[in-house]
Picture (tube, rainbow over the protein chains, first blue to last red):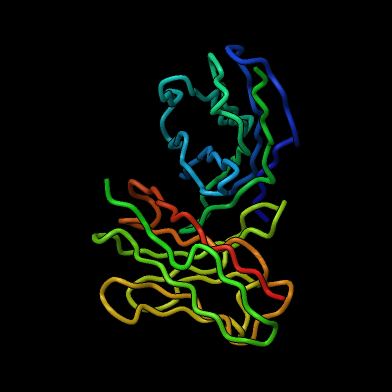
Length: 112
Length: 116
């Protein structure tokens, strides 16, 4: 079965610091997509960043970037210059066929 | 920017009652999905829908669940006889295409279902 593993249930960092959230996944598909979703207390799912597996270049979106290691099946999220508004649950996810498989999430606290 | 909308935002129902959760996907999207998130747990796939039929469903999606696209805009999830364990956040999502293409699912804000 396809799985997405987030080994850090909870993390805390000081505002303005850089934080990295870890994710590993397992898939038998040759082409797939990886995502990081942010879920604030409102519980809405907000797409943070997306990576297409056939692209070697790591995706970046402003302060958010990923380290995609395809051979190792690793997909970590780096948040630079963290802000209080980054406090949320972060889910790593991977496509399988038409659906998205989510990890259990990392709860991130940004401390003032 | 177009977005997926869901109504109601919060639904409270008694055990055994039927509920219908409604979603309006983005207008040019062709693939529709329902996901569920029990409080404190991960988001789980329920069902995908394309061309007016279910394309895939999970083991969670048993006979108590059904989906429908009753008109050109709405996409609904019906739970026939709710159970306490159906209490969860239900997310609708839509995408322009399915797999192997640009592939991005847009999620709605969710409907919080509370079964008492």
